[in-house]
Length: 56
Length: 465
Image (cartoon, rainbow over all chains, first blue to last red; front, side):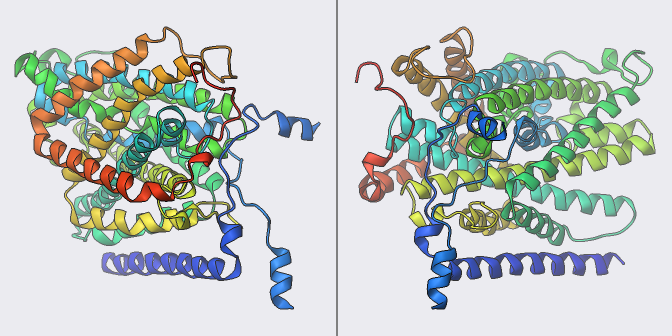
């Protein structure tokens, strides 16, 4: 049983890593670099006041 | 036609998701650190004896309280991914920021490697106790793959899971304390017989400061979530200060239980990895043994989970600012995570976890962390001088400035000396690495940095500029 668990550990690891790699490739193909790299630093709402106003 | 449809469906701007609250900040900070109560701190006992380790617990506790206070003030104001890297960029300049970014990535990636290595080895020990010999490597890779997968798919789930397993690990320490009947001295805990003064004198106490860092290493990681918190001005100081209070309690309880159950000669050279688990074993209670085994495993997994989160944010921020190739500054359009940075760092952590001994990996992490803490007092000093109280909105104002900054700087200097006593060559090699990396940045990479884009906070002109 322990030997089987070891093989299961390798198999689950491989499945998860392959899924991430597949998703990584598909996202890079579907979206342009301009979109993927569009994040900008800078916070304009330090105390969550905007979301509070929206909630009201 | 199809291309046009895809182009129209693409969002204009992607940002990291703002979904976190104070409990996630607590889970990130305490989750990264708590593994240090379950293992590692006990080598301070080997250097300075049980009382030396207690002094290290207090002194390094003071160091980290200063770190938490300073971080809470600056991060509640400079609320952006990258934490201390972004602070350095705003307060000091690009070369310091590049170095601080590298300290962060290295500290978290090495700690992550150590954590998953420990998780695999713990399962090997557990199976060994049941009479089965299994390899640890598949379980180390499995832990890394599962945590990478969770991190890849979103920060909310990542840190919610961290909250649950960190709280369970902390609860296991409380259960062990209750199980040893501290209200009845001499029944289970034998401090009177086991505390033997300072076996190597005060130089041993000084050397033990190096391993005292394990009690708290990583609490500054709360800053990395700054861009994903709903209300950074409130949640970051609250989560960070609650985190350091939790750790001070956990460190004191850990020392109290372990030094009351195990002789310092054993505790200081514990080859079984985990002193709290060993302490539970010594009580003879199967329930406590199982609870502490699970607590130890959970603490290692929580730490690795938080480290993957933090290392990827620091790497992502440096990519976004062109300190590294901009390719790393990408955000996943669906999960809103820095997916390229997350995936890039996983194979590096795997190589260190599988092929480098734990002590070496953790020493790299501690040295990078210490370099980061040494930068913080300078950062704090400049922050208060350039933007005095009242000139910008702060979520937290730490008291007694500049005393915490001075205390932090002095304690960092003393701890560097303590590290030099045991790991002088590694310390020098690390310094050489950062000097070479700085040369690469200054003479090659800096030409790609857009200088006008470095300052992103909506603050008034600093005093004196």
